[in-house]
Image 1 (cartoon, rainbow, N blue to C red):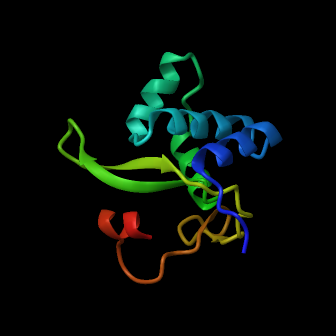
Image 2 (cartoon, one colour; image 1 turned 90 degrees about the vertical axis):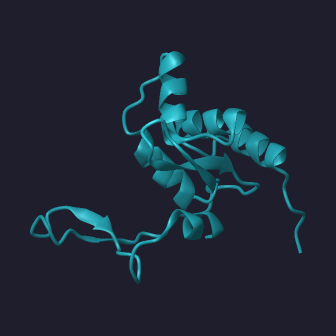
Length: 129
């Protein structure tokens, strides 16, 4: 059985070994330094530092699939909607399994992730996943 990394060790290993692409690293680094934080907080925080904020939600999805960030709760946004809070994990990036299938809405020209088995996942289920 291996020694479990702390979040600090995981952060330093990812940083020192370049285990994430530049854009993924920018988002991961922001989350690490400001956790827990919402997607909107990440976008606003990166914008304040002059970084490109395009496709941040895509980077969040990728980082989650790499198992280096996870949802850790939710809160009510100023809009009244519930939004997820994100934090870093103690893990190093895992290989992403290719779960892309032809898009049923664009005659197979595009690709989408395989649908989740049954129904809609609530924020509580997402946090406990």
